[in-house]
Image (tube, rainbow, N blue to C red; front, top):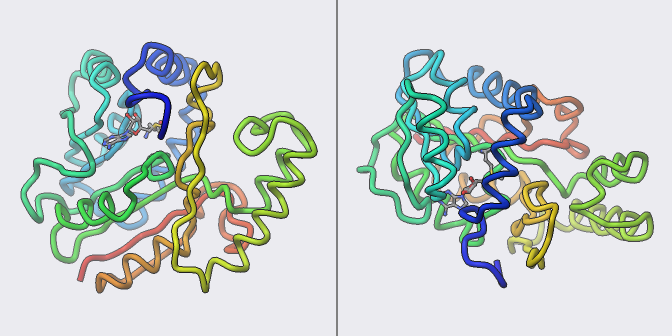
Length: 255
Ligand SMILES: C[S@@+](CC[C@H](N)C(=O)[O-])C[C@H]1O[C@@H](n2cnc3c(N)ncnc32)[C@H](O)[C@@H]1O
């Protein structure tokens, strides 16, 4: 990301993520995340919720698991620590974590990987700290999905990430079709360079850098010898249709 140095630690981002969480706006989406995780990871497991932000997902997961919530943003984690006293939170840089190899039964992240430049670094770290036969689970909006562009075209919601007017959204729609068809043969990760300096909407994925998609992630885990059990977060609406899936949910078993 250019222009700003780790903007997740800036006041405007911290305010945004905390207000979003407190207003209840995030509960439904995080419920879908937790329900997806629960399909694979057995109760009582030791898990890492990476890029946990203001801590709500870690708190929800803590009802079934022994959770560590980790994030690089100190002010956001300070808030999480005060708000959810029964959960363990820890500052970690996902690119180089302090945990030993094989610490967790499962490592998961929601709405996180699309904010990362060094995708392979972070995925390798997630795999490293997972036990053998454990799971890495990545849930993320799939902005590759033509469904997102169609939805953005019909409702004002979501315009900001993929276009600020109808013409830009139509442009993104064709781009998403192109991406979807070329992705299975194109080994490169697709990035965008958001200019978020002075941007009020920060936090609504306008700061997305990596255009996350199930094809890259599946390929990465298979290359590392993992068994990929799912690619779509089917607890989210419309996400069981692979080509249209609005939410990806990659589940890799470390064998
Ligand atoms: C969009 S927020 C998502 C927060 C939460 N998972 C949710 O879904 O509400 C992305 C989070 O990733 C964190 N993050 C970004 N880069 C990171 C890194 N290198 N290591 C750890 N956390 C990072 C940010 O601080 C931010 O809290």
